[in-house]
Image (cartoon, rainbow, N blue to C red):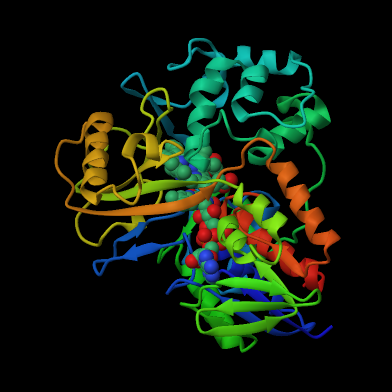
Length: 476
Ligand SMILES: Cc1cc2nc3c(=O)[nH]c(=O)nc-3n(C[C@H](O)[C@H](O)[C@H](O)COP(=O)(O)OP(=O)(O)OC[C@H]3O[C@@H](n4cnc5c(N)ncnc54)[C@H](O)[C@@H]3O)c2cc1C
Ligand SMILES: C=Cc1c2[nH]c(c1C)Cc1[nH]c(c(CCC(=O)O)c1C)Cc1[nH]c(c(C)c1CCC(=O)O)Cc1[nH]c(c(C)c1C=C)C2
């Protein structure tokens, strides 16, 4: 097989697909088409001259599991090992995660003591929920909201406070609408396989993909890493991938090149760009689902329709820097359940896990306030009209009221990330099944990758790029 493969979208998903495709002799030409002026998508870091680094998108990647090991293998292949900043499980940022409930910060219960005792904001010991969980029989639904699943198995208090917050801290989403089957597959599968989440966690619920260990994955296991970042910020990862693509000579890399439309003659594609067309035998689409939908509108209307139904939310990310050490508590950060404040999702205490990203000279505290998500429109109105000043004021007010920090920040930056996190609502799994069936039935030379489908974490997205590449050329 000698093929031209076009990869659409140069976020971390598209870059991962190119990285894996470029290892295969089966592809004669790889073309990466990115609409923006830079690669990396939501992986975006501001690096200040005094050494400070601020993340606008993801800030920590988990090393655990097959997808976590797969990312570390790629990091090692890119020669970035010495750039990794690990955070171990015994670090305070791994042990302390807080909830802001009833106007107060509460450490999330952990360890045996935390499970046996009543720990505010919860009104009874977690062990009671654990016992209820083991005794609750299997659900019969094909899918269920995360809130309904957790209420049924563990009780409404955990669903209303802990799970509501967790969904805000991962999907910026509403657990009453998000699908347990698609957002928390380990919990869904544990119930299906073992009849219980707890038993599923203890006994396992089946094998996953086989990812071989590397020196870096062995180091992460030996040193007990809970998460990691990179010295120059996570944007260094797409930068290293872009450099590899450019120097490897196998990938034609185009930025500022939005894909405007796609048409197919059954065996291949014609890709419409702003200033002409290019041909490809196969497409790996690592675009947001809606962007792919609009490009596909005339070529595959029913597929386009399904893609359009995958919703997204907008998040306001405000990075703040304070003089000195101002935090009254230490840890990863705190989440705010929607019952406490609908618009304020949570605050990350960035300088606790990654003090290496503080400026050189004199202590500072770096915080990130995240706002909006599924509640953006309701709280802040139209994202096109909201002002940076309003978002900055709201973020600094939250830092004052939640953390008692009364001094103003010495530096700040506001980023409005429009449509940045896909929402896997109830029935997402069925939509994916229908879309993949359509692609098969119509022999469309198209593979889907990126955060719109099978997981939003950086690890999931990198793995989706690899799966798409290997689906085409076999294991590389
Ligand atoms: C605020 C925030 C915090 C996060 N925190 C974490 C975290 O701590 N840990 C973690 O694991 N994950 C985190 N994530 C999730 C993770 O960062 C994303 O899910 C992931 O980066 C998505 O990658 P992607 O390649 O699928 O999509 P994108 O990054 O959206 O890339 C898609 C690319 O396609 C391009 N594009 C769009 N339309 C076109 C077109 N018509 N033609 C050509 N190109 C086009 C875009 O410009 C973009 O570069 C976070 C996400 C956000 C928003
Ligand atoms: C407050 C909003 C958000 C915060 N982070 C994100 C949002 C929307 C986005 C995000 N955070 C994580 C992921 C990846 C998930 C994965 O499977 O690896 C994404 C897309 C990591 C994460 N952050 C929190 C949790 C519980 C997780 C899951 C993995 C892990 O346990 O590390 C909690 C959390 N996120 C934020 C805060 C303030 C917070 C808790 C204190 C910010």
